[in-house]
Amino acid sequence: MMRLARILVPILTLGCLAGLSPAAAQAGPGTFPAAVPQVTVTRNLTQPSTLNSSWRRIAKIRYGTATSRLGTSPGGDNLMIGPDYGVQVPNKTWWYLDAAKLRLAHYSDTGAYLGQVKLPTKYLAQGIYFQWANPFALADGTVVLTGNGVTPALLLLSPGKKLSKVKLPRFFGPMVTDGHSLYGFDENGVSVRVKPKTGAMTTVSSFKGQGGRTFSITAASDHISVKRPGVNLRINLIDPTHPSLAVHPAVEAVMASNGKLWILATGIVELSPGNAYDVAGLFSVSASGAVSAVEPVRTLYSETDPGSGHHLGIRQGSSRPTLMFIDTDAVRVYRKK
Image (cartoon, rainbow, N blue to C red; front, side, top):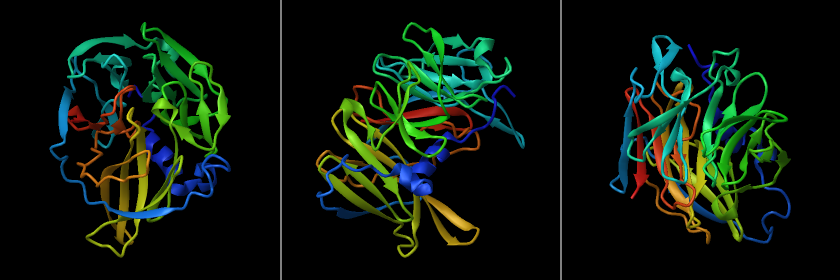
């Protein structure tokens, strides 16, 4: 097996947003005016079904031994684990973390193979294990990977396809980027900003997305709170099938170039101990605080999914989000029309 471990980056980072470290996730004093009154809205999450007609599949990249296909690696219990997600860079191409083939694989927006960058042994744990996951793209085209090895670090792929390793003072799980810095949580659950090209890590009270737009998201047992300048929202989450039961949420979020904050909310509804099911939905929050209707989503995780990246993404400079799924036979990517 050529990956170091099957890490669960989204579960870790979403867990922080979902309240495992509430003190770290809350926005600090002065970030958002305290005088802004809280507005409460309700949105329904439903069991995963299918994406609606506002989404178009743009790529389907199959697995296989051919260089043009992405690889899979053994994950135990006869499971084959797929790639560690991909990210779109500003020139509209994609880079995928192909752990099984120890490389970054390059594809067009429609999934055509464009080439690869193999990882030298010095960037592999013990010279053989793939130790990188959760890719992000900066505005200049740099791809940033988060390390899950023995020491905290980032791996950068420059627009000229040169690799470099940047040490971090402590482990870090990125959530969003403004195109220049990464924002997320450190190993202590503290919200931080990281400068990818230097490794400088600074404690922050809120995150920034495209255009330097500030926001924060926190989640409780049955709702999420969203703050933007002049906006203070409590979004109650309900499963209409069992409206009296709490939806325990986790979130992914991206900021679009037009100022919309897109939120992928997933949740667990527990009918009884050991008897629970998943619900999910996608919606947006505008700069003025308008909350869109919830869109249905398909099943997020397959047995092949390594759980090491984000389903919801957006290209720097774009206002149309994407959804990525690591399925048992291929990676599928959809874009909002």
